[in-house]
Image (cartoon, rainbow, N blue to C red; front, side, top):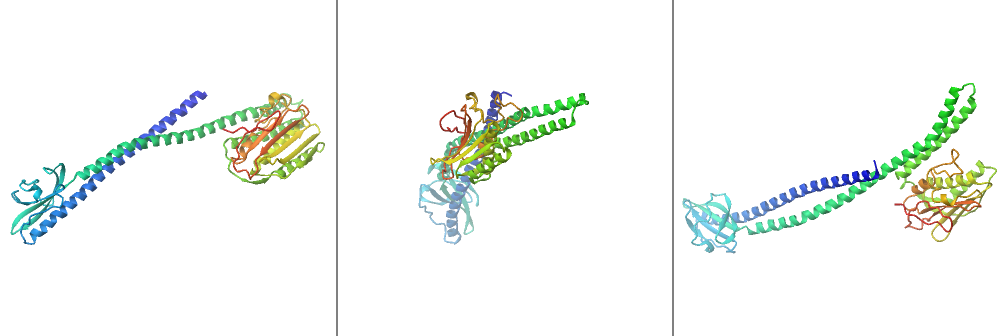
Length: 433
């Protein structure tokens, strides 16, 4: 699948995920808004109904007390009225604001209804309460203005109509960003997987082909084969494959960032450098390893990754040196700790200085089996977001110099950088995207 088609597929997934999320949020918000408006209207209507029933009950108690039918009065003529009607619907008594009006509602005791009255354009909530006066069945009608219910529900409805689209836009934006971040992580993981498979297939092809070639020759010409030589070849290639597998696993962990935040603590970098210098002296007795320029330096980071980086630099220098390898570690006083590993080897051509520390790079004069490796990029990537690290390789014809720089723990805001090679001048940082 081409990169363009892959990006198109990810974009389509992002659009579909955002659309589904927005649709689900819209359905939920609309349902919640409808429920809110209906519930609010029911609650406010119940409050108005209860207030009207309480007023009608007061008048009914006076009638039930045997004191006759009183002349009802209201405190807010524009918002409420009272009527007392008999079984035939004739008005027996009424408040002044509806005097002379026929019964404004025909309700049985205990019923309620929304009724239009001449008092206002908005409907009134009317409640009927029964009463008995000397054997005569009466009904007290109490009405209250319900305009407040409509006003409140209309206000909430308009607020929802304005607010819901805004919420949907915010939900769409948040979903778009979240899905985009997730898809970028997926894309990086897939890219790392493809790169790992590519590295594995490329690097393992050579030792496997060597073992197969020697085995086929031994089977075709058993009389000419030397068991010891064949076993030695197989052993060498097996060791090489084991080293490649270890390196590939390191690359996989570095690409997936599985170790970025693990094991970060203060590390005495001079101890790691001196240990590597001692290892090179033991492994190469005929080589002069100078570590007199190693000074005290402490950084905060992943000790294993720092050790791997120092070993990579040391092994590279020892592989290409003629007679001498020199380690120098200094705290430059400008916020950086600098490590230089020099050797008296042939140096690096100018054309190779931008790729020499990349993974599995073999230069033209070092294509022998075992010369390639993962490079220093994985170790630098493992140092973590708080470790600023730079790599460098100098191609002086009289020798070569590999170097790295770190910010010590006292520098709290350090950029992360990837290895960069230079021909002259100090290392220059490159931000990892």
